[in-house]
Length: 106
Image (cartoon, rainbow, N blue to C red; front, side):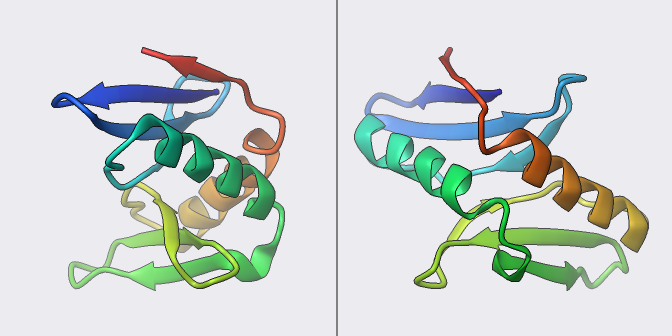
């Protein structure tokens, strides 16, 4: 499920949660609800394409990923993972959960 949150007036942010309630992807802050909704649609469209995932290692050795749109813009980022396999599980969870996920405004 996507949770769309209003932050500080007209700013919006969304998260994608797995069925167990864990956040698996977070967005940037958008200047409008319409822009955030477009971001959600972009995640749904791009989630199934493995080439859209940028796998990264932080300076402290932990792993994370970014999901990018066709234009190369980051549309969502993961939490930090202690292992590469954990990161891959996170990517698989986005692929599984995002395409048909409902959006709940909170």
